[in-house]
Image 1 (tube, rainbow, N blue to C red):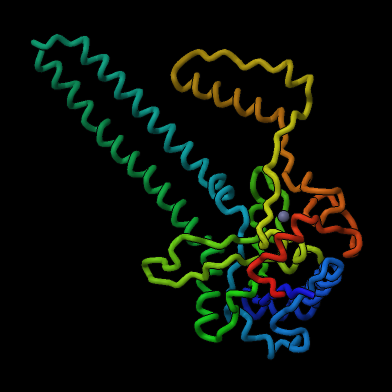
Image 2 (cartoon, rainbow, N blue to C red):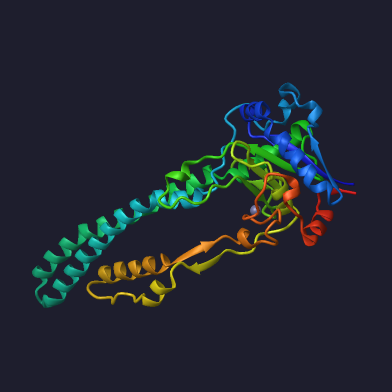
Length: 339
Ligand SMILES: [Zn+2]
């Protein structure tokens, strides 16, 4: 039997305690073990299940409290959160531009010789230009706030940082073991206009970005690791993510037409009116066109209908699923598998 070597980590001690009460992570390992043993692998977890008491496992918690709560949809969530702010400032920028255009047209009508008349218009232009600078600065400020929130919510880098610190302090998380971080995910995205499907696990690939992050200097754990929402995940999540960690990606999602008749009937509205009117009509055309399609995630056609990687595969038991030859081969060569 080849060993699939895992190191379990918890975002903080409260996540660890909640998990141990329900035995979720232990049962995920058992499930994965039952699944993989049919293919010649056994799952080897640190801390060993015999150490399955909170005090013994405590040092495997990345933090004592206030652990990272990953939000899988942060960029999308933020773009929806900030969209009304951009729309508001952009409308004021457009109005400012119209005023500037109006004054320039007026200026064109005043003869060069009429210097007094021209000065009146120049003076009117001055505050319009100042307002424009303020609006630009306001827009930059919104962009900076959004970028700051994105960095602040960068859970994958925060986990990398904590994993590196854990390794340096306690020698936990050897490079030939796959780190599995159990956490409680944020569900803030459920407030989003278009709520995406819930995500219960994610594999974060090995990084070749510098291991050190400046300001302040921090060491980042560079290896592939998995993060699992231990409250929401099904028992097969761990077995599924292990295949991703071995290098398998789902096929790209595809867009399919929802209703062919509507699609054939679709004609974009003609653009007319001011620049702003035309831009709004063009935008609406795109939105209406996009609404005729729906996106099918690649996981829905990933391998056989009972493949461990196929989103549509069903069943509670490990025996309900199969591992493809290609993925078995990937696993045999994975960095965290030992002969
Ligand atoms: Zn997947």
